[in-house]
Length: 193
Image (cartoon, rainbow, N blue to C red; front, top):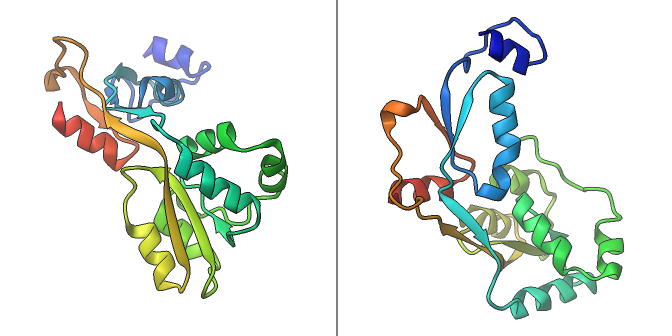
């Protein structure tokens, strides 16, 4: 407990995660933030990435839709994940960045979920809505936009693939107390390992 209290900045309070071993299933490049949160709460993170975020082989379709969006062709561009935001930051021209990213966020849902974003975005009938995201994106967001009278256009911005376990390594359930998932694809990846 002394080590955990020191890791939490000297706090002597006990947390529900004190001494627990928690599996972090996020992609390797995205594990640091969750690891830091777990350590701050007294847990020991165990790295076991179940997915990998990969670039597209061709960005022709994505670039076409982004040019259309930069020209004002969409009423809304819904960015549903940090992965999508990172891809768009790489793809957008300086003019598009100034136009989009220089604007305040119009809708920030109270829950970090695509369905909450759709429910809280004031879509008008006939609004064209660009939805860049993973090739494994779930269908609820475009369906909800269509139900509101909008015209959803989904475009793949990146690939989410199941990450194989390191050679010869298997997760022993006896060596962990909990598993943290940040997406449905992480659960699917975990189930295949």
